[in-house]
Amino acid sequence: MNEVEELSKLDIKKVPKLKPFIYDYLHKNVLKNFHFELGSGMILYLLSPSYTVINPTTNEDIQEFIIKKTDTLNYLKEYIMQNLTMYSVLLDVNSYFIEQNNFLVLARLRERDSNGRCYEIKFYTHTARELMRNYKDKIYIGRDFIDLFQFKRKYFGIKDLIISLKDQNEILLEKAEQRLKKPVKYKSFFQEISEYVNDLQTESFLLLQSLPPSLDFSKLKKEDLIDINAQYRTINHYLIELRDEVDEFENLLFKNELRFVRYVTKYKKDLANLISYFNIRINGYLSEKIYGYK
Image 1: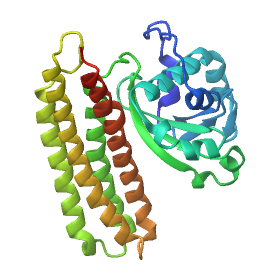
Image 2: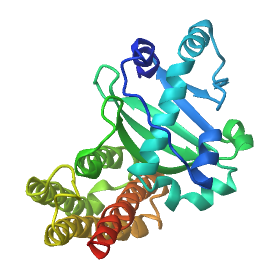
Image 3: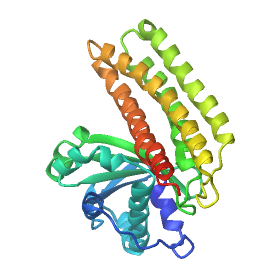
């Protein structure tokens, strides 16, 4: 875990300037109640919206980082929120739980061997009171990926999310050996899920090769938009097939494999979020452009 160290080296003057942004009620309140979780060595530091260290006991190093890098943390918070608004539906589809928890959202950053440029972020929600008492009971709401030097995402950013599904499937296989009573009993499910994941990545990347990385609507004909929308919908169909297989596996595990099922539930959550992203932000957005085409 090296997020504190990498952010300490980041020159905030060199990152792209953020444009003014108008948030809706949900996003505005999440921004006010946004918590960071940043790693340094083996320690995860949980920071309040004002960057007070909530857990564990603070020390001089982390306090010095917060004082010197407050502008960096402010920028990072705003950058993440704009990404969540433009390239995600995590807050929208989890708004019930977020509002129940007074809009508290926790962002756990993981630097991706990029010299502080790229991060995977896992998002959780919890009540402020229970964040300290029962931290493990926090609700996982999803994950996202950001590049601090490239806000605009090619192909709506879905490549990173699909690669993540494949990576998380590998982790599931590892957890199965550790947590399942009889892993061999579920061999067919693991084989099926792995096959679906491989098909998803292979076929999706082939489809994306035929599409423009970014869409210039002033240069695209209506027929082009219809074809692009259909290609993205096909990728979504692969996701739905994978989700259905994972759902069946999860239902079976609830009977007698509670030590492992939570990992499958989290995986299904990532799938559900990505399917919603397609339905709302990609296919929904493209359909609106098609119907409004002049």
